[in-house]
Length: 90
Image (cartoon, rainbow, N blue to C red; front, side):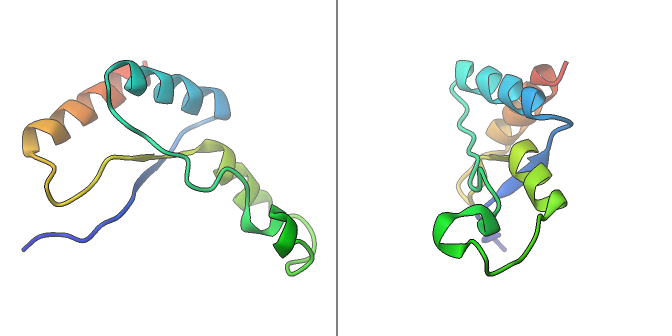
């Protein structure tokens, strides 16, 4: 059975930690993505739909990072990504 995951998202302790890890991964030719750099309630055409601030949403928008995931990813690549994530967090 193969999975259909489309995101493997991790939460980092801070925006700086996310930037550091993303730079480290890029230097190792490992892609990573910030899919939602702001909360949906902060996008201009959606403002006002949800009143007030969403503190958790805003914090997560600054600290989450999505790593490569797809059914064709070989186990050796998964291990390499995991190893480089650990290195990048040191």
